[in-house]
Length: 448
Image (cartoon, rainbow, N blue to C red; front, side, top):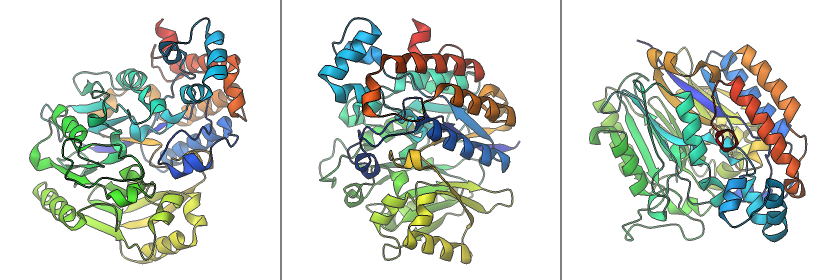
């Protein structure tokens, strides 16, 4: 039976703005308070989805969240009508209102960790929503994320859903941004690679000094247990603390894997040689041949990797078995990165093609092509059990671009977040979107 890796891209939400909320994310902080263009952001993301669909890749859409999160503001002591809550938050605690308006759910690489049925004990695809508890504006996402994923992958015969881990520092979980799967084929058993920033219960391990380590070893181990993964099919590796302190807030900012290939920076992992040996041995046990493409620091510095998001790219398998790398425009604009990529293409490496996409609106807020997608490996039968309303087609693309043009603003500043009409616009848009994507009632305003 055929199997596919499906990319479900996050649809950028109507409140896309540059709040500078993510400490440790260089792009997010450096573009704080720049005026955003939600309409352009959503269109850029949709254009990438449509392009990949046209290339023959199965492509899906993951809906954004209701923002501002008025219910969250009420839990923090603001009261009255929705307009009263927004006005009071804007007057008394503008940073809280900005956090409650964040459109960061577009980065669905953080939505959940996904294990395909070939790896799990019960033979189902398992999803665990990420608690994202390192940042308030992201920690409020997982209840809606869980409902949306349940509406997309609803058949309990094929899909299992787990609640987010306890929202405490020891179980900080950032989802698939710190998780990669290696396999000989998407429908065959593989090796799930969990990368963590710190061990919460072992202070003997080194830790970053400047920026927080968002993923813990304990969270990764808990997800592996929930998904019923075997010891032979899992590898845990610590991220290099020095690169976290240079702005590598997730592993997918410095490494990306697909199939039998790991494309990574020389400084990505703390014990790199040992990690490569373990990955090679365990993938061999699954019948695969591990291939590491290591980018030397003297060719691409960590700073260049962070600014260009070279590794926050999509690594996809073409029909001929060779790989395509989807990179942001910022890679072409960086001379050292582009020189490296040209040399890579001239070699006999597994990566045979590079395609460039303009994702400036997302990039300025700290997320590139890989951040925008959640990868789900599915058999033909499992793909048929997915809610077909979220699978990209020419018709759905036309409907979604029209939906964006009707409902999204073309500019948004921090001051605009205090406009109560923004909430009305968001709810109106999302109510229509749930019908377009056949999701049912998944948002708080639809459930009340």
